[in-house]
Amino acid sequence: IVMLTFDDAVTVTTYAYFEKVLFGRTNPDGCPIGVTHFLSHEYTDYSKVHDLWTRGHEIALHSVT
Image 1 (cartoon, one colour):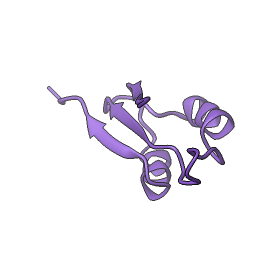
Image 2 (cartoon, one colour; image 1 turned 180 degrees about the vertical axis):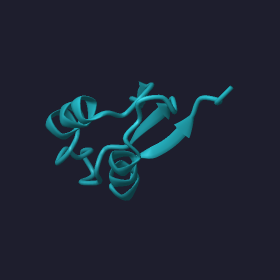
Image 3 (cartoon, one colour; image 1 turned 90 degrees about the horizontal axis):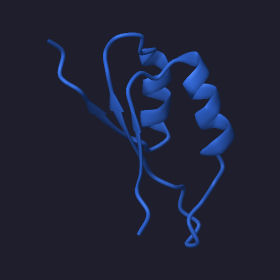
Image 4 (spheres, one colour; image 1 turned 135 degrees about the vertical axis):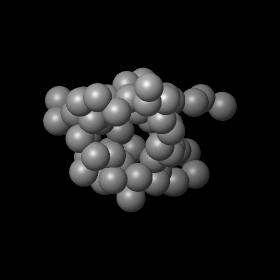
């Protein structure tokens, strides 16, 4: 089993990286690969986070203090 996680803000720049590296890839069974994003609030583009969520990515958060 391989688990992919990403840490901190989802920005226009990081989202472009996710598009290039993650989108359109599948597991051997044909299902899209799953990813967990551990977000920080600062600098995060929540419209991009929503798109990741609709694509089946798991969204988790750091605490906001």
